[in-house]
Image (cartoon, rainbow, N blue to C red):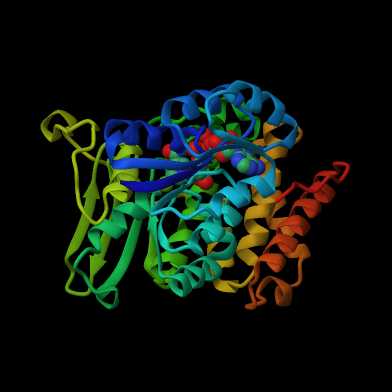
Length: 393
Ligand code: NAD
Ligand code: MG
């Protein structure tokens, strides 16, 4: 039996992970499930999967969780420190699926007991890539990428030498506004941005797909995880979202990873790794699909991609600043305080407000990452003209 934990179990990735685990239940013993504020869902999952502990993100919700789990023998806990305590419980496999920089620390804590960390939380690598990779190396832990493009690259690299890689190409669907005229983008609402043509995901990543901030984060994620230099990592618009990534080698050969747009493939790959097992996703019928299309991304339409390249050039703490500013700008967009195009404008302004020495500071520890994240969020509030209440890490 493998011991597993899921951080962010009530979200889109968390639920898909439990869907797979439920199909080979006898193979797993669930140690911890952590959720956010959806106590009903967390309770339902806990009663079904019988973890040692179920944790909600807010202490205020703990009485409700306790009451709902009374008599089950499942420990209930609440708040950030409880999530970290649960993440510190040894497991063989853990899924990092909290959204945002809030997912960084549980992942880091989990890496310290070795084992496998399936990493959906791309923000961990964007904010603190070197810290994540070093922590894994120091404790003999393995990080497996769960982001579909990165899982695709990982799979294409099996049996290959990273030194022979000439280019990594990650694809982007183009999100909800791919075909909108540029002048209409300024009027886009959060509800419009929260619909994705292909993938069914959480609200925040879906909006990030429409603004290309998701792909911007993924460029940085690919650079940090695979150690490939930024100039060799490309983004390709591919509306069908069936080719997830293409790896080009020095002999001119390319290996593309193709699969249905269902995150259970990448999650299942990480869950079964290093083996492959049956995963209940659709089997593609290429004759029915007929054709696949590709085009270059329009950087005027999607300034987030240019900003990601600047961040990769600067390195150090710039990823933490970029992500923190993006998260806060997204909060303001979702609450209707700023328009769609102002997200990227605001993030760019914030990066310009922080000195390049500080952004590029290569000594990267958790406290510095956290401080940079908070500073960037507070600067977004300043730029947007919103009374400051810097987002919690
Ligand atoms: P989601 O919003 O559906 O779920 C997020 C989970 O984190 C929920 O359980 C929520 O309760 C919890 N959470 C939110 N804020 C928290 C906090 N402050 N403290 C503790 N828990 C908190 O998000 P998702 O779409 O499942 O995405 C999760 C992560 O996976 C993100 O980093 C996302 O970028 C990445 N990812 C998602 C997909 C996808 O298809 N959904 C694909 C690739 C990568
Ligand atoms: Mg992705």
